[in-house]
Length: 462
Image (cartoon, rainbow, N blue to C red; front, side, top):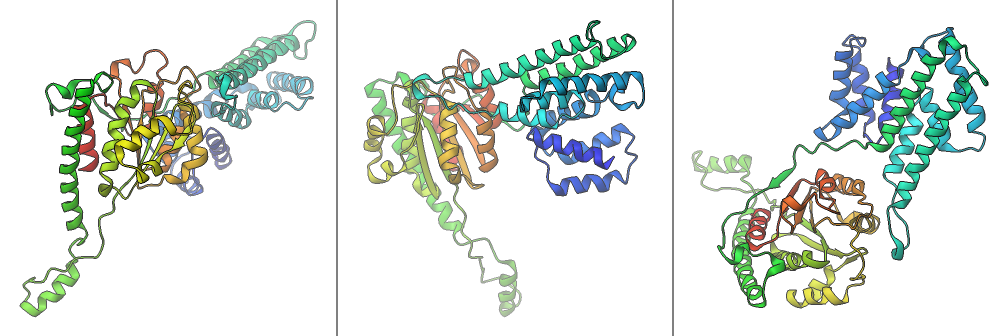
């Protein structure tokens, strides 16, 4: 049972379910306390230790079913029977005929068919994470799609080969067991096909969705940023200046008090001995409140930029509220613009960003490529004190969304907040990838007008 559990752990790791050595040791110890042949108890022990969050549960259940049920077959477990001998003969013929060229995927499929899913799970996981490296002038997600098509063709080829081996002209098994072997082969190959085409969805039970905003301003507060006139833009800027001043005063007072630290109870009581036990002198710990760090990744294409310019304006005006603010903009390629805000006045910096940043403003928006560039160059900017704010409509022109990268970024930072200038009812239309991206965020909210922006900033700062 321990060896079987270890093989299952290897399959889980190949499928990107993180399991530590300590968790494996815990399971091995706990299996000695139960009857491991009671599947309910066995499943409970594994699930409790390996599916550590709601986000892992669907993937765990899928792998458990695959390994302990779909991979189980009388044709492979029985010994010295006509069926098992026939199944082994089919596998041997497939191995001899299809793996001579050293194709790793063919070998992985044959291993999967024989009851060892490890190699196939590893290759499928890499395929799901395959990144697009096409030239900027002709970007698409065809690399990943062509790889999937190649696997589908290999699955169909194996099915055809098995039919040949079981046929009357090329029979390698007795006719009496042909039907049962064909059924078992098709069942496993169908499982391989499902793993290829049906990616496990992440269960994001803790996602915070903001549906409504408070009524801060009755008229200007409801106008979408993309529809503001010149006069209304100036009015919004005045409102933002007042908001920034108010929040700075609140934050400054809060941090000045916090710098005194929490009350040191032991030292306070010790000093109280001089005053008949009355705590006249309050002693505080020298531990200031830690400020959070902000990293902003901002889409600067079309109507998204209309909202983003106000968002960046506020964040940089509230520098005192955060220990560090770093900003990145993209259309397809990613560029850091933190220094622009440091060297220039905020409004001047924003205008400069729209004309002088080292990106191609006329390129098609590609969120997958932007995430790929951020992970490659700036992953070290994220830590467990960092809030990552993504500003954009998630419309990626049908390019590869590469949402697995957002999952990696989530694991590195404190939280991910996605601000979308579009109303939520449009998040599933057309080329929007919001349905994929929100599964890897801690909070998503529509933020397309002044009222919504004020709500978010107040929650972020206060």
